[in-house]
Length: 374
Length: 231
Image 1 (tube, rainbow over the protein chains, first blue to last red):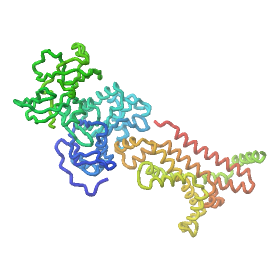
Image 2 (tube, each protein chain N blue to C red):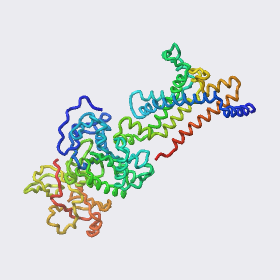
Image 3 (cartoon, rainbow over the protein chains, first blue to last red):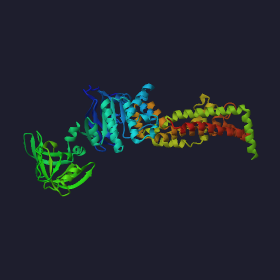
Image 4 (cartoon, rainbow over the protein chains, first blue to last red):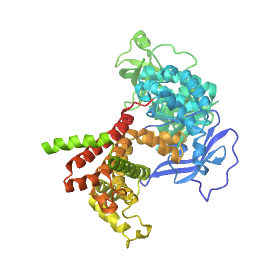
């Protein structure tokens, strides 16, 4: 529905495929999404991450023009998307968490979007065959779409999206409903397809590993607001605030105060201990953040490798197996309430003879710590 | 029992002879009821879809109205349509009363709530996320309706069968607005009523069985369409 009062188009920003300007979505009187500004770079995969209920799917539905922002503007190549919603949607493709195949053959499903675009039959056939083969489900083409397994159906759904040769690919948790082996196989196949055809992709996921594996850039959404955007290294290594840190898996967030600073190394006091952090402009009061996998554990009196500047005495509170690694909960120094988490391999736990109650040194580099001003 | 048996024998004789009047009445019945059902589908399915998919104030009373209409006595419809089409009535100028068109209109009024109600129920069972997917695939309004009809086709064929079944079997409205005029507005049900009242049971039975056979054949066609697993 074209709006009469459409504001003039902004000039397209170089390399920005999609631009959001002042977009706000209100549901039941509550602001569920408030994005002052967001640019989605052309040809990149932007992973939109955040906890459940953060507004990720709402943002995606807004991009599909399935819901209308109360105010604000959505631009595709600098042109308002709402000016011609059908034409806009026909430049995009979508896959959801569920395959959402229609009651027709697998092939007909993959051809459907092309049929709606009035592509001649021969071309539809050829494209459907290509993409079904590309996703390893070419042999299912003649089956009824409701007679294939969940993993196969999701492959068909992705083939249907890619068959449209979309400028923009919108994905809402496309792997979340699959069992683990099916999921990792499909993610690898999907990554290789994505690397070849490189549409501008927005991938909504609550899975950090998926975001890191597939995203060229990461956007963190919490409570309907953009909290951080950057490369995976930036977001996962240097979260912007404590909530982002918690979501991206930075489990060690310690309140700290600056003691001294020289030559790019700031020394903070954490739970009575001194901690060195690489920082050119350290804030006086900060949160020191360290990823659990950046901490190694040593016996208390052991010689510590020279490159690691921090070596904090600690005691083990708990050891839990989480996936392939052991998650060790510690408390630092003599403080009972400053806790830390380190992930180590079962082999090193065994080599060090670690058990609950053991005294250890928690060791990490000054460059592995990241500061959030308080 | 003799009455029934003789009646059936006579009915067969009439069919085998190819009684011109019976054939004419049968064809008219088929034409009138098919047309009424077709128009009720054309209007009823989009209305059913709108009621199933859109949320607007007054939707609930409207749905209740449709559901009431599904059980409307044909005699009441006949009365209402007769008044509308009466020579001195609001649409009397059209001169439709006592024509087959009047029967088509009355039967349409009987069928349309059934078609709306059943298609509403059928379309409501479609997963709203599937509708989002259809829109996201780039369907325009008409294409979306086509996809919805396709997805809900089993339920919509049920609507078609219910609508056709209701109109081909009703008699009250057809008599009131058509007048059961021989060679003009006589249909199988009204003819059966007339022949029974005249005591010509064998003709009445021939007409009644013809009605059943007709309804069965039409439903057979629709049912095989409904139960076919589409490719």
